[in-house]
Length: 304
Image (cartoon, rainbow, N blue to C red; front, side, top):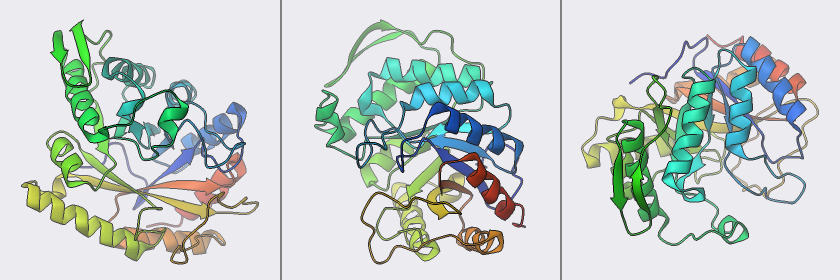
């Protein structure tokens, strides 16, 4: 299945907004989004975390941001990278996604995962036991909701009485999973269209060769589970520095590869990922400013 939307470069390039590098305001996010919507970009992404790696760089709540972005853009696709099913009941999460799908006129890519930072959940007063089992129930419920069913559900973690999804969009949902767990992929591969991996996952570390290792692992897992690997488009989040970058507020492994320089150097790095088979790059651009998006647009214009 192909990546949704017209692709103006190979690979397609999206922008990650609302990232916990430094404290950002809505005006910064909005201005970045408008530049991206007018430029050669495919999509905008916001991560679903309640806290950043340090205080002073906490992201805004993802679904509020995506709804606002849907209202101030006209072309780019929008998505969480990736939404944790374990922050919400399945009905509430489905309603949030349905609202973004409606406001954006069908531009949502519903990226999903089971949650990657266990320490967040007690801060939010939420459980994090059996995250994949909780994901499995939530995902099953949401698929039925988006299919327009009215039903009751009795699981180990969720119990819904006579529920349905109000105001289901006429536009079908595009699903993306962010995982390399065999069990997670077994749950999701029959239903999703795309796959996502993060630059911080070992041995990726922002390197094309590292991405290739994870992509090859995904291919092997697809085959082992009985699914055709070419059925899914593949996306990867990377980190790119331009003038004025603040740097990441985390300790980086020695294998981490920095991406930056002038437009030609950045374009060369992006093209290296295309050579490894990535369909969509979701760029965490540093700094989180409209000027940085404009600088990245110069690099993207050099692709192809």
